[in-house]
Image (cartoon, rainbow, N blue to C red; front, side):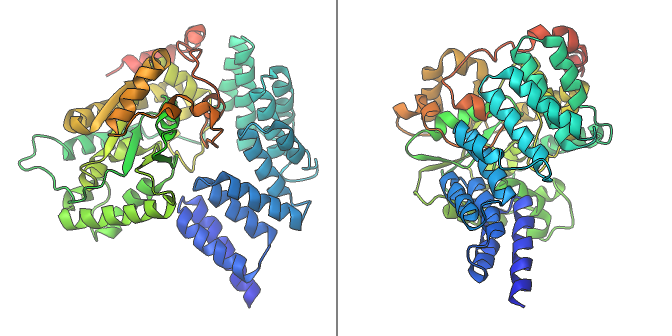
Length: 456
């Protein structure tokens, strides 16, 4: 009976983790571990939650404990290997990844880890060789095939092989099973602009919450939000929580929370002061459980924040927002040449250049509306300006958060934080400018993107 209960709690914890409900997941997994102490599988699941909640070293310690209990536990070795790779601990990462044998169902994932190790170590020919091993072993419809083709394309890009890189990225994005619903995407943006229109007869209600704790970084994927997060998150009084999905979960459950018959975003019109106070209190409670160091600001840069600026401003009238912009051609190429975690970013426009251009135009339209509507709370920064004048822009960012200047904000690359986004290799280096105008060598391949950006 106890074994059944342990398995049920473990399964529930993993499901909650996949849904982004990390605090609830941790509670279930801790309960399972109490019933079955030192169980390697539960330790691995808990380690993944610890990492998502920002405690990388605790996660690595749990993975090490799992491997102490069961030295051949391949999921523990693979997970620790990936974490160590992202932290730049290359030799230890390689040691873990090499524990996965070629008969293991995790072998191709280990090959992917080795490909990334070589890519980020600037051993581009080796990255191509290791990613090719995956392409030779798995079918085209396999997610790892797409990821291997992406890695191979990035290695070819670094070698200046523009045409070959584009062939690899086209191969990686050749997924006709996923269709982007332009009509639904555009309707949702139109509806939000209408709901938060200044022409409404009476302003929408706001909570009475005075908290300045939450800070929201807003931008399209690959726009430079991770760089901004690392700069402001290096301040001694701030805490980065990365792409934690508190707000997405809150928004998706909002109709049920406020007992509305309407779906999102229509149910937003049913919010009143009491409901907004309750939403803010619940969310602050979530932040309090993470904010063990009692930091003054908690930084959230979830990829979907741009949908929820109106709701967040209603919940937190004193909260600060940072909007990050970048050359749309650079964004478009970068989105096309990277794989996204579909659990964190479930939009299907990322594998077609024309759809990327469409999405950019509509997201930009929504962000422009938020700036016009909530201008006092929003600071806009250009990615290119950060690269050109990092010190001045960093001071502007910190001033916007009503914090005193901290020199650590220019030393973010020395912290060796774990970054759970596609930009993790870049933010562990000093600010560099090579990403500016990155699209230009690819111009002949990007006609669809250029045309789409000009439409409408």
